[in-house]
Image 1 (cartoon, helix red, strand yellow):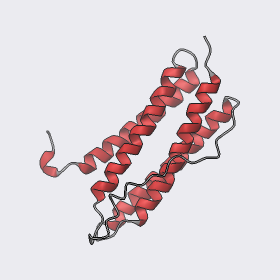
Image 2 (image 1 turned 90 degrees about the vertical axis):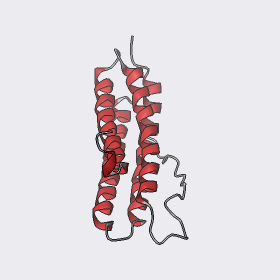
Image 3 (image 1 turned 180 degrees about the horizontal axis):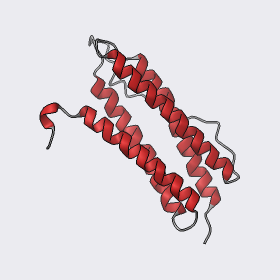
Length: 155
């Protein structure tokens, strides 16, 4: 049994596109934050954009490693505008984080599909997928903790 390189490359290109869209999304979010908590939140969002670029590069490297051509596209940039209310004085950070979670879920699905495709066929692709799943699940956990209220701790 050997890895279906065409399917792997297609998944990796989808991952790269989604990660690049995340770079734009997190950069946009960072520009939309106002208020006295702006500095640490913007710093965190910018860090997520940088991490997304690193993930996109890794996916692109895997594409070329498998003999494929990296996509020149960017994933969907659909905006819910939940964080862009014209009537409010401040943007609810929880809305930005909820948007972030839904995008993280999409990338996790792709990484899991890649893992399933590679299992028992390519240790290299398997390990790549596993390491990215760990990173994405850790990130998702951080966002979920940011969304929890202090009174919810331990529940």
